[in-house]
Image 1: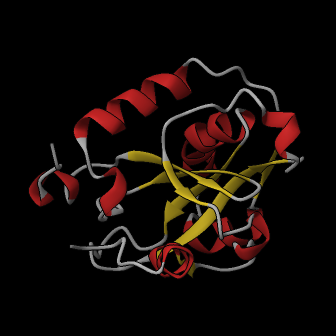
Image 2: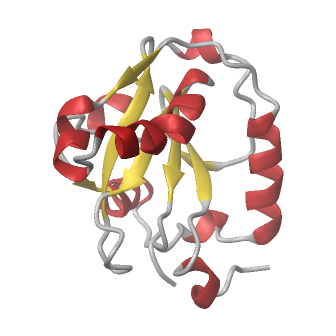
Length: 162
């Protein structure tokens, strides 16, 4: 069952995507979800699977980008918490850059695992969206980017809205 827009736009929903050479975790921050995973059952199942994954990776914070978004150090430490957990499980962890605008499609990397080698993360067998034409190297670490545009280019279909 599809998640209604009224719920999507008032909740921060974690969703996951498999790339050609790794996985990403995305915090929606009230934004839309790709059509292929806009489904209660998929979100719940994937979130449960991810919660059971071990923390296997050393984490790198994307401090340069975050400095522009979060100024207060105490708040920044709280902000990093979930993203660090996801990165320690092998995901590049991404957040919506402008949470005040539900239509804004810009995202940024918050944290990522030190190693991006898929063999290092063989335990990441989760059901999620798949974008096999997108590489980890296609995701800029130094600025915000249009995540849905990146996913649409890989699938040659409109993943953002039906």
